[in-house]
Image (cartoon, rainbow, N blue to C red):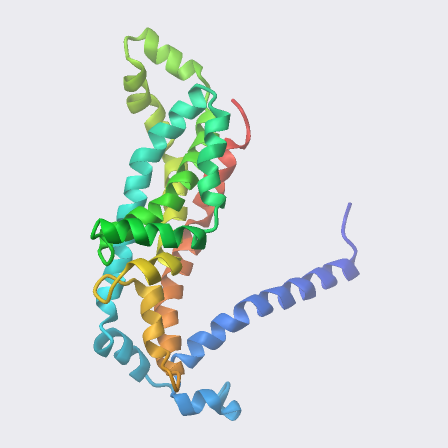
Length: 271
């Protein structure tokens, strides 16, 4: 049924309003990152102003944000790789042995509010002399990334026909060999999806790093608070730092969204 002209106009207007409402804060943040604090408070210079790069110089040079970018990249990469190494074989086993109840228990770790874990985590890791190191951040991020990997990959393995493994076993491979040589290469799209979502989570995580990191290992979301003082806020530096955190991960999500969608929907059907 062909849509009426009135409906098409309404749809365009509605989509435009929704898109503008969603991207307006992002555009304001990027614009404010090129303003001085005086210009940010001046409503008359909301659209017309003299741009300055001082905020980015302050963020990338004076505030040593290059180190914090490296910390974020290292924690996100290490937590994602470790979660994939442990989660993909676990998901394969749960899928092939129909361990649905075990999968639900693993998923509960993703549902539990992270703030409820911070006090026991801090107590345990402080006794182990691990608080302030990057290792404790990697482990805490894995607590959420690992269940995500397991659940995504379980759906992916459920959609793959068991006849492929049976043929591999007939050809002389063991179950481990069939997984390594047949199932693992075929599951690359699912692994990519789980890895991308895990990296996005680790990059954006604030709460774990706020409590468990120190001055040398803190990540970008925590480092942003350096621009928030007791008596004043450096809005220009804060917006520049927020842009450094937000824009790269948004670009990654934009370019890989089709792979994420295809990986998530691959496990939606059986066979």
